Amino acid sequence: ETGNEVMVYFVDIFEGKYEESLQAAREGILGPPDSFYANWIQAIILYYSGRIDEALPFYERLLELVPEGRPISSEFGHVDTLHLALARRKAGDEQGANDALQIVKQDHAALRAIGSVSHMEDVAESMIAALEHHPDKAVTALKSAMQRGLRDKSYFVDPVFEEIWDEPRFIALQQEMDAILAIEQARILQLICFNNPVPHDWLPLPETCEGVLEQVVP
Image 1 (cartoon, one colour):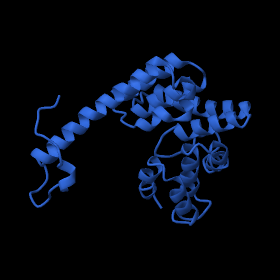
Image 2: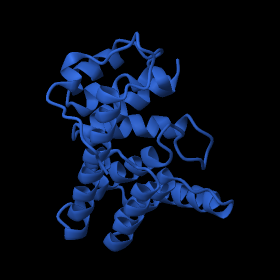
Image 3: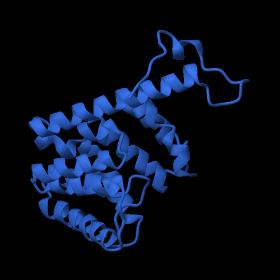
Image 4: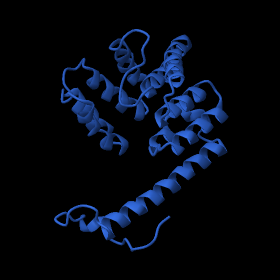
């Protein structure tokens, strides 16, 4: 049982195929029902499908599975513990939300103190700021994450940022991400379709290059 096996579910999740993914998780495909990854994937599915109240028990169980005082450990850094904080807040448990937030803040500060620099640390900083109602700081940190390589658009629809979804700076940052992804996709298609970097016995699917014209991209 590994995180890589769980990652195959993310295409379905972000295409909105929540019930299919949830059913697979509950049928034990991810191992024992009380395993870390079985709880984790169910928490993620329920969270992103808007069923945050149903996700809460799974996030709580995940926190129980790690050493006391530590954030939930996963491939997404502090994000899961911040989702727990939001879920507790929406359930009316403000003290619990603050407790989860403090776990993240302490771990985040410790990582910064030893010189940790990554786009996921910037994402954590941005989400912390959003949960603490500091929109400008949230946007600034998210922009820094993009500059360090963040290319995941799902953060822009994460309920953690719900309070600033309509903020002009947040919308502008989302548009900037769309523009970056469009340029990078164009570069990749040019490479695949006109300058294939892999051995000649491999060719892209015809539909991959359908309508793609050779051009110079930035």
